[in-house]
Amino acid sequence: MGMRNEQTAGKVKEREQEKEYLYWMCSRVEGLGAVSIRKAWEFAGSFREAFYIEGTEFFRQGIFRRESMAAGFEKAKKELEISRKEYRELEERKIRFITPLDEEYPERFRNIYDYPMGLWVKGRLPEESRPSAAIVGSRGCTSYGEQAAEYMGRELGRNGVQVISGLAMGVDGAGHRGALKAGGRTWAVLGSGVNVCYPKSHYPLYQDILEKGGILSEYPPGASPRAFHFPVRNRLISGLSDVILVIEAGEKSGSLITAHLGLDQGKEIFALPGRITDRVSRGCNELIRDGASILTAAEDVLEYLGISKENKGISCEKQDKGLAKIEKMVYSFLDCEPKHVEEICTALNLETSRCMNVLLDLELGGWIERTAGQYYVRRVL
Image (cartoon, rainbow, N blue to C red):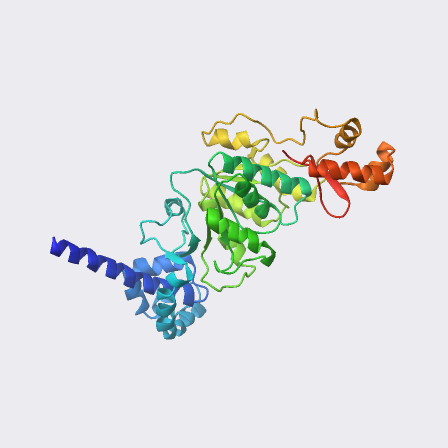
């Protein structure tokens, strides 16, 4: 029994030592991606042994694609002790460093070629046994796109689906908020360190996500959000998901990168159709043209995941039995595209003060919502 305990303790110590060297490779060597780290590990036999191999040898072997990577590898060796200290202080910062050496490493990642070799986590990890769906789309989405994303997040979260997104403005944030409003769980994969909230205005949302799910990143704590980080992190959003919902996307958006990465990973893609004249819908319409499933309701996704639900449909409609005649008239005039109060007054021949009072009543009743300025839309319910 004592020998078995010693063997177990020895394995734990060896794994922790390996993780310290892997932490160094992931956090200190500039430009070293997941595939290069994995190949260096496979070539050397361990992360510790990889540390003692010269960068020029990895370059000769084709593991490092550029000589600058070899030079950076050697330069970073001076920071090993600083890296070790940082690794050992992670627990105090409530951050975990999860690697393929750990049992809790997400199994969904093991199915992708360039799976992350190191993952910084705040909060919890998604459950392997629960279905997951990514909700992605334009930062500059329309009011309808934002409502649709929140609706999808809400309905999926309500039905036990884990919602994955990137905490960005627009569709991402709306998807997270929808899941949280339904009491569901959601995870944000960042293009910065897990302790760096970007955009800063989403800090309250960041905090809420931590309570109900978690924050993940392939970049070390303190890493700033750099433009090239986001396309790289998108493969993690798709990798954690069983299905990917693209709500609104331009022709060359990051959401399309996520969708195409998902296709490469064998994931089902659902795209919200839009008008051919809408710039933010062109990417979605192209995905549908190329074979993506049309997203018409939350049931489309739930059915694919094998989950049943009674209420159906994305809808701008709501039963209006409780509305007064003039309220019904204003509500019926509105749709999912923002309309200015002057346009409403002119079309319905209403005085501005009367119209504003009706709009306020409808807004307080949850029937409509105000977007920018004095523009109003029906709520997606």
